[in-house]
Image (cartoon, rainbow, N blue to C red; front, side):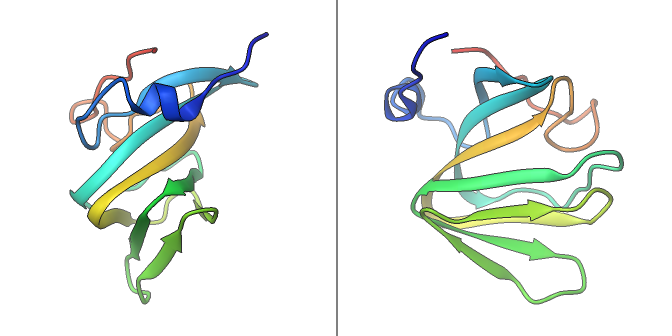
Length: 117
């Protein structure tokens, strides 16, 4: 058991759309990531997708619905199976939680690695 300083972890990398695992929680990876630009539309057939904006602002595009703006201190959960795309005009820092092994794109062939820091 130890404290995890999210700002320190986020300062360890500068890449975008590159989640880094910072803790484990009930079979889930707790990750930090930086968003800028647009991520591809995708879905997770078997799990919800959890986003907590730590700094900045992101927009969540949901297939067939108006875009949702998510600001620092707000969270957004995309239900399993829903096609979505996060995007951010300026750099946005986000905490994610996903089951261990869940590809960030929903597809192992296109998923980013999730290094532990």
